[in-house]
Length: 79
Image (cartoon, rainbow, N blue to C red; front, side):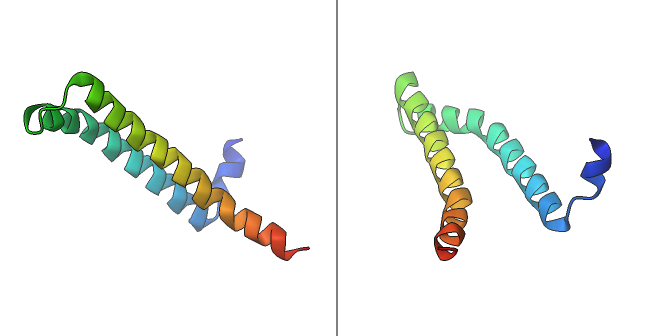
């Protein structure tokens, strides 16, 4: 398994590193964002939870959209 990892293209390594970095930053920022939303904007715990869950849901949706739409376009061109 690790032998195959060594042969990854530079683009794949860039995607892996960028995904790791963005998720790392995201999980470091969320606790402070929750505190900010509570103290500065007066949101309650439920509203903060819905805000963060909505943010995650939008991220997942656009992640799939960006990943799948080029594949669908390529598949449509082949017909």
